[in-house]
Image (cartoon, rainbow, N blue to C red; front, top):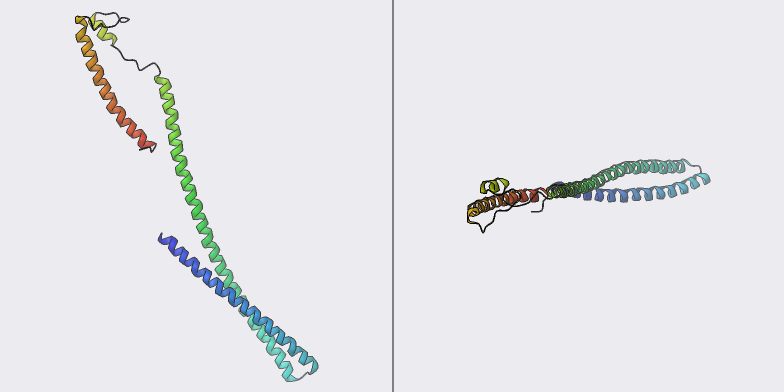
Length: 196
């Protein structure tokens, strides 16, 4: 903010100086025109009457024109320098705006790319997980209960109850653990893709 204010103040000062120099340049040009009109009259007088006074008058006008022309050139140089400084400030401001826009594009692209990569990976993982999320009693629990791996534990049979209870308790614990870990993972993913 401070640099921007400083540059704005500097630009306004230079524009004010430029306006004054342009005004001075116009005044000097008008002065040269008036002196040239006077010179034309003095040269006419000299043609009519070649006196030393008339010659001196012509020389006086020529010296005045030359002096005023040098002042005009000096103002022109100063005006050119001020215009160059104004151009440099305007160019720096334009570049700063370009850099700011580029930074915004970089940030937007960065975020969009992260989100797209996450979306693509999520689709890949869903495809890879297809058919791998089945629940049920493990083959080992069925074997301990004396049931074939292709058969199911029967809750109606008293001898299967403790195997079913152990399986259900283990499943609930596994689900709770998975839920906790999944919540942490989702929070990390949301933070990564900036959705939180």
